Amino acid sequence: MSGGQERSSPPHGPVQAGGGSQRSGLNVPVVLRVLGRRRAFRQRDRWTRAQLQAHQARALQQLRDHAYAHSLFYRRFHAGMSDRPLHQLPVLTKATLMEHFDELVTDPSVHLAEVEAHLAALAGNERFRGRYWVAATSGTTGRRGIFLWDLDEWVTVLASYNRSFDWAGSRAGLRRRVKMAVVSSTTPWHQSARVGATVRSPWVQTLRIDSGDPVEGIVQRLDRFQPQLLVAYASMLRLLASEQLAGRLAIAPEFIFSASEVLTGETRRRAEQAWGRPPFNVYAATETAGIASECQLHAGLHLFEDLVITEMVDGDNQPVPPGVPSDKVLVTVLFGRSQPLIRYEMSDSVTPSDRVRCPCGRPFALIEGIQGREEEALRLPGVSGGQVTVQPAVFHGVMDTVPAEGWQLVQEPNGLVVLLAGVPDGFGDDALADQLDRELRSRGVVPPRVQVRRVPAIPRSPLGKAPLIKPSS
Ligand SMILES: [Zn+2]
Image (tube, protein in one colour):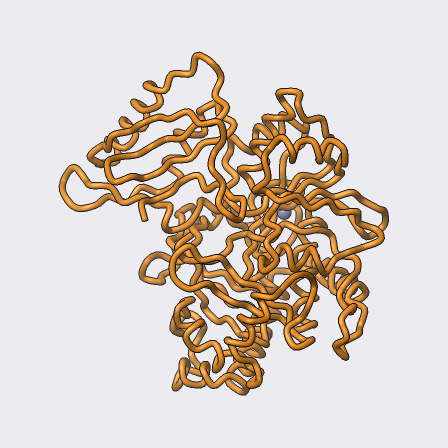
């Protein structure tokens, strides 16, 4: 994740209560506000496409007006362009955002150095100066990104995550008490931890497990807890599905959510086999909160177009056609006021769907899915010279046929290393290497040396993630 965003970071729970415990002067019960906003969001499911577009245009104008009125940075960045359409505005990178942080935020008394100090001391649900919830993205290269939200924005963040539960058909937290397990990062500055700390609730009993913990421990705790809702990173879902199929885990979640990482067809199939129901894929990011989510028809993910404008573009910032994976996305967060994000660049590769409408009737456009990050596209020497870019989906296609509990493809200076965990006896490593070799040749690549290595478990990052493809850094 050299782009440094925390993709789809925040698995979290249905929101019921919390916040407001801090002396802040903003003692409005967060719970009521989130419920109210959640209700308002549900009504948008019945909008027509034209209503949605009108809302979007209005919200964009309000965002831009606010940014020009209160952000010194945007007045300069968009100078002479305040009347131009969105797609003609300059792209905002994380580097630029962080470099001009103090001038970009709309509260002139907010300074990056103080926000950093606040984050460093963060333990629970404290707000920066009693007013702002703050989270950071990890950023494996370069500077980490820092983002803040005031009460009203935070309510939208929480309600947007809850939309995924609503669309899946779960009434969690609304009419009945539910038990939810979230296996994700518990690092305090991570947004999922911030969300978790805000939503302590009498109606939702939440078990938070660090996805970096050993799998035996995770299995034991899940078994004892028996969650009705399970939220986890895709690689963790796959591992847990294998544990369930092997008889070491025996849970019966009614709803399963995959947040963060790529949910491949095989991982989806394994989860369905393990628990008798397909998982719901959720696309979210710290910077945006929820971006897209599956409805009960699993026909792709509906974009949250009323909250975020997501432009799926190629390397030259031109829109990609349906069916073609983008090189990156440019997000405009329509509800952001404290730290406006307009055409903010994130390195996710997302494929717009060619389905015009979903039979569920929601007006929100569909994406086929997220195939990873730009950096997961490997650049390999081409047969006819130069470099060939191989998209993550190519590797997913081959690797999805491997009966493994987990896999990871690592690009090393002298070739590709395939890590396999939990492969049944008799699986042919050489055949897999040959298959990768053939696939790469067919794409005009000088095939690199492919080495298959069996490992007890796929190594996890400090945030407990296990990306499918690790390019050489
Ligand atoms: Zn739908």
